[in-house]
Every structure is written in C-alpha cells, then in structure tokens.
Length: 520
Image 1 (tube, rainbow, N blue to C red):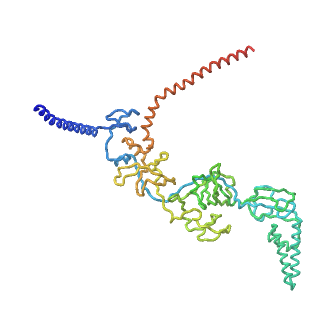
Image 2: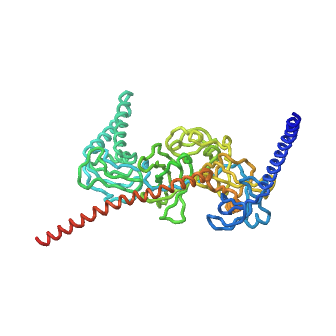
Image 3: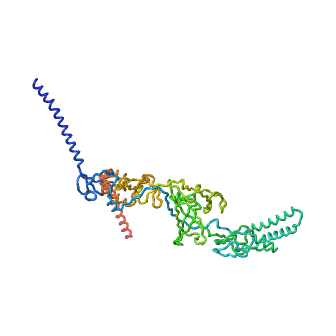
C-alpha cells in the first residue's frame, strides 16, 4: 500500500511538470518561427513582381537579377520620389479644375445650289418661240435681261383689251354715273393685272398704253439674275402655258451639305458658326451657319445630312466642290452645349443669319423668331462647368483610364488612381468620377512613374486587375491541360494515316488510266 501511494504521489508531481515544460517549449518554438518570418528577406524581379524568393538569384522568366524587396509605409499604388528624381523624370502636375471646354468637330461635304435661289423661266401664255437670245447654258444673266422673243395671238388680244379699257375710261371720265365709271375702271385694272400675271412688267404696260399700238410678238425678260444652268427649248417650237424654257440659279448664296456621324450629332446645333476649307483655294476660309440638321439617319452610311448657308458673292464656290468643315462646340457639364453669344437672342427658324435682341419676325421669310434655348442651347447662367483634366494626364488602357495624383500633404508621394472619363474636348478630358477639384494630377512623366512602380515590385496601373487576378488560375489550367497534348497528337496522327492509305490507291488508279490511254 505504501509503495502504490508513493508512486501515485510521484506521478501527480511529474505529470504537471512535463505538461508545463511542453507548453514552454512550444511557445519558444512559435516565437522563434515568428522571428524567422519577420526577419526573412524577400527577393523579387523588377520586371515580374509575381516572382518572390527568400534569397538572391535569377528570375526564372527573364533571367534578370532579383532585387531585395524593401518594406515601407506606402500603399500598393503609391510611390515616393525625391526632388532630384522628380527633376530627372521631368514630373509635371496640373490642378483638376472646372471649366467650359471646346470640342472641335471635323466634317466633310459638298457645295450644292441654294434651292431657294433656283427659278424656272416658263411661258405664261401659249405661243411660238421665234428667237432665243440665250442659246446655251452657263451664261450669266441679270434681272430684266431679254431671254425670248415669242409670237402669241393671245398676247395680242390681251393688249387690245387693255387699250379698249383705257379708251372707255377716258370717254366716260365726265359721266355722271358712278357705277359706269367704276365698272370701266375695274375693267382697265383687270386688263393690267392679266398682263402683269403674264410676265409684263409695269414699264411695258405703260409703254403699250402710251403708244396705243399692239403687237403679236412679245419679249420675255429674266425675272431674276443668275446663271442659266438648263435650256429646255429651241427656236421655232410652239409652247403652252407653263412650258419650261430655262432654269436659272443664283449662286451668290450656296449650300454646303455635310455628313455627320452619330458620335458627333449631340454637339451640333442650329445656328452654329461653321468654318470651311477647300483644296481649290488653299489657305482661304469660308464661313457660314448651320441652317438645317436632318432628323433622319441614312441606314447605309450611318450618317445624317447637315446644311450650311454660305454667302458666295465672288462665285468662287462652285456646286460640286468638296469641302471640309470645322465646328467648335462649347460643352458644359452633362454634355450641354453652350453659346454665350446667343444669350437672350431671338433667331430666325429658317434663316440663322437673322438674329435679334427681341421677339419679332424674320426679315426674309416673315416667320416668328424663336429663342436660342428652343434650339437646344443652354444659357451660360444655367450651365455648370465640367470637371476636366489635361488630356496628357490620362493613361488609357482599353476601357480603363488611370491617372497619378500627387499627395496634398507630401509632394514626393504619387498615387495611381483609376477614374471614369467622359468625352475628349480639345486638350482636355471630361471626368465623370474619381477626382475632385483642386487635386493635382501628373501631366508629364506619368509613364515613368508607372515604370518606377514596377521596379519596386508593385503592380503596374496599366495592367488589368481582372487579368492579374486570374494569372495563377490560368497557369494551373495550362498545367492541367498539358497532358492532353499527346492525345491531340495521336488524334492528328490517326487522321494522317488513313489519308496516306487513300492517296496510294488514287495514284495507282491514275497511273493505270494513263497507261490505258497511251495504249489506246
């Protein structure tokens, strides 16, 4: 009993001691392992940051010497450059600001005739064309120039009616019956109006009344000036009322039809100023205003037509000439088009050159003027400036845009940041999100910053995060698919063997046929 009791006492003493000793040893090993992990050095490749070794050596991908990875307090997308390094890299920054930017839209098109300046010279009464004074196209005529000498019995009758009405008015001048005087005067006015509608001007009518002589021949004069672009008649033919004889176009004003792509439609407005150039006149500029924008898109070319009115007093611009056009559109936030010069102005709905300070009617067509805001413009007071950065600040990588932002507290630290860009307008990009007003972005040397980021074994801002995250899985997938290669080779070989067997009998059959043909 005493021995068993003694053994139990010894066991009760030694078992706790062994347990305590084991705990002490395990804690010591754990601390030692942690210190080894903390003190362990990591070496990486400046070109392939995914390569990490516990010691120096060569990169297995490019054979470059590995560099020691230095620990610092900067983030994964941050880099610090000394003043000397910034100077050597020529790092330049600009403030993120809000402003109304200008977008240049380049278009191409063709000069065409102004449809409103094209007139048809037709016969207003039946007759025979005895003389054509303008006997070929291309001649320039002025208003009132004689064009045609026509024989017409109907014109003779109308002149006789005029003279008879004139005599009746004179003979009844002293009549006491007002009704008779009014009737004869109305007949005279009707005779004059008939001749006027037939193209006889007031001077010709007065001459007929003064001379008192009628003629069966009459001269048709040009109702307007221009260039004869079409001749439809010949001498000696008989014409009816309405038969076209000439077509005359006034080229002192021409149209330019421009092709507009879908991406440029939102920046164009009625009444915008357009600058045009032509290879026919190098260095010379022509100006006009947008007069019409086609509401429909051509389904084949995916463009729409835009018309510009151009004054062409020198007649330099000929119909058919190719031109290039430039439109400067001022853009505010949310892609609103702004034109401060049209603030509070009223514009002609068909003639953009008519601009007035108050409501009224168009001097050309008589239509009511409309406000600039009704044409799609936004007043400068209501427009909010867009958040923009210089175009050189953005690094475009497909669908992503990256900028390097200088730290507001330490000018030596730069952070790579992904932002969302809008449209480009001249030397600026409109920023939708990712930046704030007053921040400084790098406009020169941003590629060098990205390279320095990679040298420090950090991920490049130019690389796609989605691809980086899947690189390991792609490698695993490549290794898993490696054993399938022999199967592919066997599969190809299985195709080649039957092909070779088929070729041999074909050659023999061909040779036997040739031998047979020789025998024949």
